[in-house]
Image 1 (tube, rainbow, N blue to C red):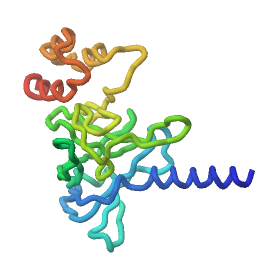
Image 2 (image 1 turned 45 degrees about the horizontal axis):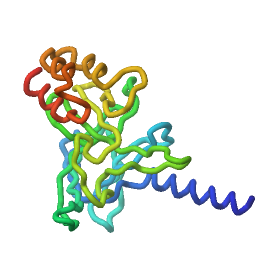
Image 3 (image 1 turned 45 degrees about the vertical axis):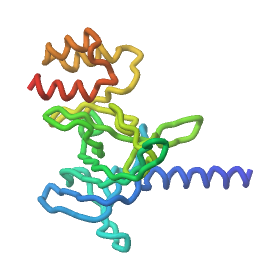
Length: 225
């Protein structure tokens, strides 16, 4: 029993640290709503997809030796990460860098909780991605994707995230990559884009499918505003 208790304590501590640990300290510029710009290293926590005991905050430090500070999503306008990743080219993994822009978003309908998400498609209507901890085989594991956490970048409509959402200004984003038991993606998208008949037609005829979420958002911004 003692061995089991120690084992589960270690697992709990590991999962807790992993949950509230950073995606990884990454070179970043943090733009605050008071017009101040912070340059240094920043990180955001990977949260659970269900209940979280701590609020999501950005951690920042000027350099590796500096003390860290915490910033609430409400105080941040955007975060620009410079991410190092590896891309497979001709069978070899080549190190590259890319820019990821994160913004604060509402996490619930009441708009009482906030977190961060990466902009996948920018514009009046945004497609944003977010990585959360998911339960697999009785344990909590991170899905692939986050600054400095993926060995190989695999671009696609979801980026490297396990939550992809469409965001209208001032609203709580709606998750669109999940599987619904009551409504197909086509029906949900038809309802969501009821203000754009041209886009509805493309979705109804299956010219646009779930894998085309980035193209869908771009089409809306170009033709439906």
